[in-house]
Image 1 (spheres, one colour):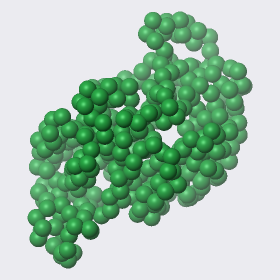
Image 2 (cartoon, one colour):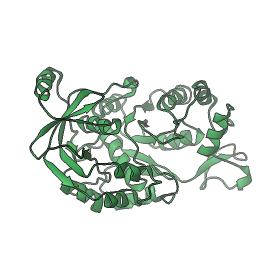
Image 3 (cartoon, rainbow, N blue to C red):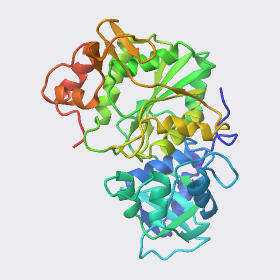
Image 4 (cartoon, rainbow, N blue to C red):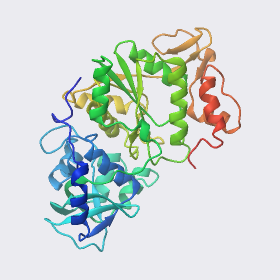
Length: 379
């Protein structure tokens, strides 16, 4: 099992017996109300998911991530984890503030720096575009004009209906050891599973001890599957089609950035922190629209020989009626007329109409879950 990114798991959670003291201290402090995406970032920092970060990026690290795709100490890091200050908020270095979510005290933050930044540069370097059709660009444009850098301390966890699926990196690492897994492949998803996903996971599982299915839970774009549908569908798939001791599912509470290649590296780092030795990278990983070439998220790994997790690359795969199985371009000699492609758009159209996709596309147990949900998609 690999060491966490940077060498150790970060823990910025206040112990239970100290929380009352911190809450008393917080009663006199200025407050910044943050949205759900930022609240998830705070929790991921505190629980070690974003190790080695202990808080929101300082200016030197921010600039290095934009320019070099690395932190200032040269450790690979590709997505800026930042907190913007409200325009009318008076605050300076050395101040301590409350980060509040839904009128509750989520965390304390020690402000080390307040700095200005260029939104256009942020968008261009992280997303490769300033086009407002990209959801990440819209998010950057909505930020305030200053960023706050400094360490956080988590006081109160967010309430979630998915707590039974929500394991910390320290817990997944213990679980993997208890199962006797030395090699673990991580699988990132924001979709209910079709046979192509199952094929990729089981192909990778042939070479490792276990598969860690790690769905992203949080704000997504319209047309993505709803969180509860993804989890119930995977429960059905794992129960019916996986060996009990070879598959584990836990969620990643996280707001997708849709940053394509940069986000693929970031996703790999996160799974390394959970304890994975390998990470599956498919076609158009973390992409949106046509902003990135189909395999840009695979090509970027050449820049990071020191990442500390092994990427497993998968190209196109499909069901071949002549082969009678899921295949890929390296294993199937037959012409396109015999192929059923795993088109997310087509599967959605079939499901929206209330029909069952062909059994060559999706397991019936998974379809049952999706159709029972009523409206399985984000609107």
